[in-house]
Length: 170
Image 1 (tube, rainbow, N blue to C red):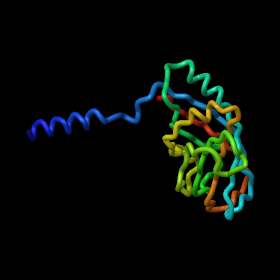
Image 2: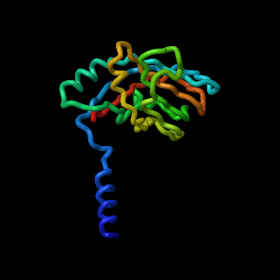
Image 3: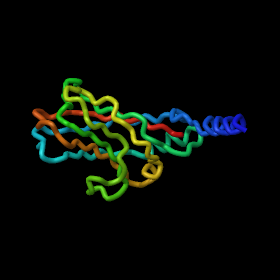
Image 4: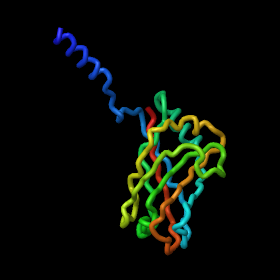
């Protein structure tokens, strides 16, 4: 009886294992340029809106095999000159919005990082949320919002940054 029970538990455990790395194809997007002005106040959060061409992602996705969901995979915010310091921000968040654009918490957070390293010149490797964004991609108007909050210091110079995203279709 114990052997049968052990075998059933083992089969259940093996059957329920699914790798999170299973994906059909990757969808790169970007770079998207945006500018952070000098003199950001540490008392407020600062949000930058970036237009997002969702149809290009859907076009790329429709050329591949069928998929069930499109989820965030990797995101990089980098300096155009590779010299701009991004350590002023304690918390970085990227949201995708298809409505209520004036709301600072519209849509769904797709990437984030908290805390960033103080001396980090590039927060390479924002952490993805496992949210399916397919419904957002099918909307007519879609934007991205890059939000810097809990600032450690005031920005001393204008920062010319770009955002590169990568999504996975599963």
